[in-house]
Image (tube, rainbow, N blue to C red; front, side, top):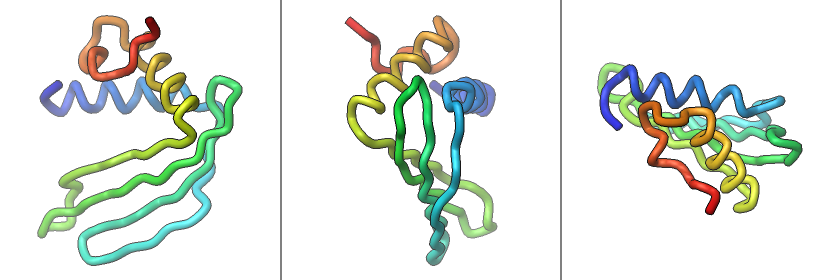
Length: 97
């Protein structure tokens, strides 16, 4: 998956899987911000953290999103893949056997 359009498509699609999302804590360090959150999706509670890495100009250089527990991660990933179908990035997500 490459390009701004592909990344934006995946992020928008994944966002539609959540039923609710609440940010609970945050912290910042040199060039990084950490956002802890809790959410519900697909009838399951999901907890996670988002790490935003900034470049020297203060622009996003990398974003990492971590979910837990594993069962919720797999369900969320499979649903994201289903919603993307054959769109950009669909092959990067868990496929239910």
